[in-house]
Length: 212
Image (cartoon, rainbow, N blue to C red; front, side):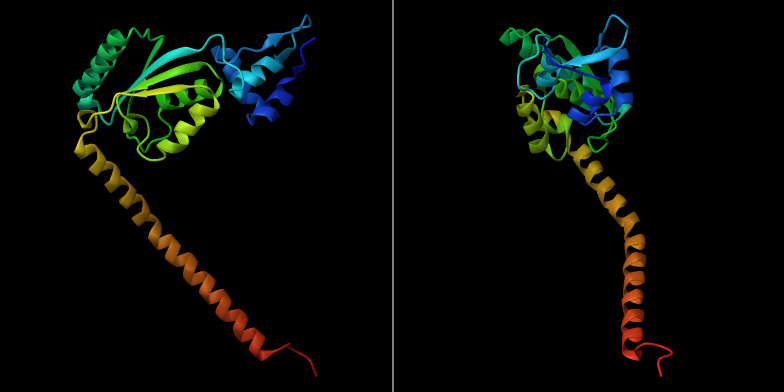
């Protein structure tokens, strides 16, 4: 008989909370099995699929497109048309189209997290994107390694036409603004550490208080 896991055991194995597993079960992302007494459980095969050690029988082909703002909907349509043309030319059937409107620096994007979750679950055999920065602006190597671990093939069409210069400038300015906002707090923390160190030196120089 195949080894099974309770939700708590399975969550510990894959590094997810029981609440996350319940959410995935409700959404059909990672359905749990039910015992005759209606207790939820997971199989060892599901664990292997999640880790990418075996291919999921339900592995899908996903196509992903993104622009940074609603004013770029024409660019979004252009991306999707380019993806469709590629798939038609190469005989690729896309099971799911995913899109986002938001900065590449925003890792809370709904579509982005949906794709990552499905990859982690071993449910994506191929992901097609217009260019690397349509999915992530920085850290693409990390994402590529994640896909490799879970048996997902990435197809990148490439082409500067999918990556407007103004979007890159906007992302860089957002990073500068974020770091600038942190500087006062970092300076205050540094000054507090310096004051604490100076106070310790003074106490050490004075020696123990109250000794004869």
